[in-house]
Amino acid sequence: MQKQPVLGIDIGGSGIKGALVDLEAGDFATERVRIPTPAESTPANVAAVVAEIVSGFAGQMGDGPIGVTIPAVVTHGITRSAANIHKSWIDAPAERIFEERLGRDVVLVNDADAAGVAEVKFGAAKGNDGLVLMTTLGTGIGSALIYRGVLIPNTELGHLEIDGHDAETQAAASVKTALDLSYDEYVPRLQRYYEVVEALFWPDLLVVGGGVSKAADKFMPKLKLKTPIVPAHLRNRAGIIGAAWLAVDKQQHPERAS
Ligand code: BGC
Image 1 (cartoon, protein in one colour):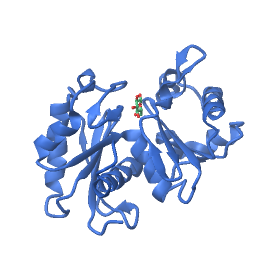
Image 2 (image 1 turned 135 degrees about the vertical axis):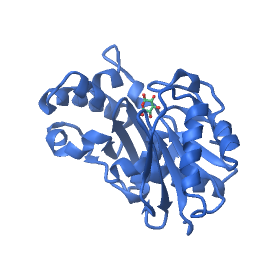
Image 3 (image 1 turned 180 degrees about the vertical axis):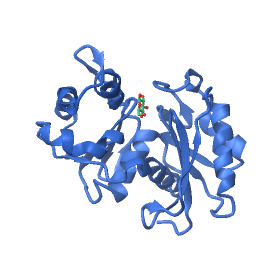
Image 4 (image 1 turned 45 degrees about the vertical axis):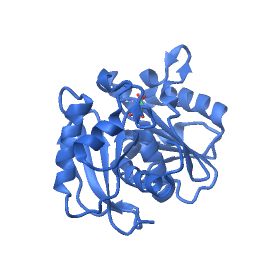
């Protein structure tokens, strides 16, 4: 797809991570760099950290766009929500803020969307030409819906209202930690979540990412679903790899809306 490595950056609640990505191999071309997320994680403060990461890779990459993920809805470069991040991201022209700070093109995407694209192109859903639904179980629940290799962005299925609750407040991995639940105690929450999701979307494959996917054998076999469900392969590399892939995809198809 692209010979020169492309920088992907993953903005999370505790760390901002970046690596150059080899998009032929679908993997990192360098070590990953991590800088803690600033305590006051406003767009300007986060952009300063992103600039530090970018300057560390100067000279090793071309002048094309870099891909950046954010745990928010992103439409046309504007961040529209802030479920688990600083509220100043709501309606911020975030892509432009990054571009002005960095002096280069930036493609800003939702974190789960980037992870889902990476899993479809290079990971657990590679080669699946149907409807793939990736969910990331972390502080919140992120989702990525990909049909025949094409991302349908900003699905936000962590915020489905289920049994009167915002779903991620019941089934995110952070809830397991906060309530000190065993996997057996956590499974019914995931069961309820995924049975609603599959009844509404009927995917061909469910991919589960986020830190808990490392322990997939402790909960996945206990879920009773109609849809095959598999753990993510790329783990914490997925966001960075997917961001780089989406940056190049946008550069090659500028006519597409985003
Ligand atoms: C946010 C999503 C994000 C997910 C995972 C949710 O709370 O609304 O945009 O993808 O958390 O970080």
